[in-house]
Each structure stands twice: as C-alpha cells, then as structure tokens.
Image 1 (spheres, rainbow, N blue to C red):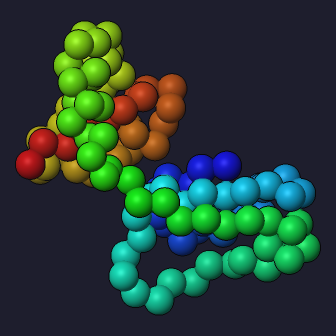
Image 2: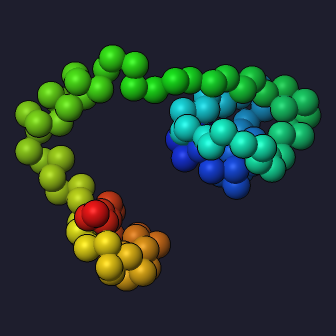
Image 3: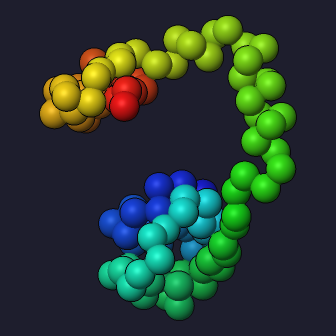
Length: 105
C-alpha cells in the first residue's frame, strides 16, 4: 500500500485499512514536526512501514514522458485563479464534478 498524501489522518487511515501482513510505503512527504498518527495496527496486523524519498533523479524522465502524452491534459478538469480557492476546493471535493482541480498562483 502506498500512502501518498503525507497527511496524518490519511496515514492513520492507511494503518487501519491495511490487510494483515501488508507493507505500507510512505511516499507523501510529511512536515518536519510532531504529528498525531495512530499506528496501533502495526503490531496487531503485523504490518511493515517503510519510508521512501521520491523525486531523486527520475523527475526529468517523468516530465519527458508526460510531455509526450497529450492525453494527460484531460486529467485536469478545472483551473481556478487563487482568488477563487473556495470554489476550487468545493468542486475538488465532489468527484462527480472533477478529477483534478488546479489553482493558479
């Protein structure tokens, strides 16, 4: 299982959702401070939890692949100016209205 958000509620949810004996790989970068995470399932489910640092030197290859795949543009369903951030988050929350919402800065 990959945890890609780095948000403490999602990390706790990953431990809860993981199957017996699963491995959880922490891909999402977390802030450098103490956070509250419920890891009690590590023992009961005999889980393995591993860290992973993303974006070593593969980012250039990923950007090349994406630039050669015009269909990737269809993933972005809406783009909002920063001033409309509330509307952007409301639409992003509803998967019937959006897939990927961007906020331009």
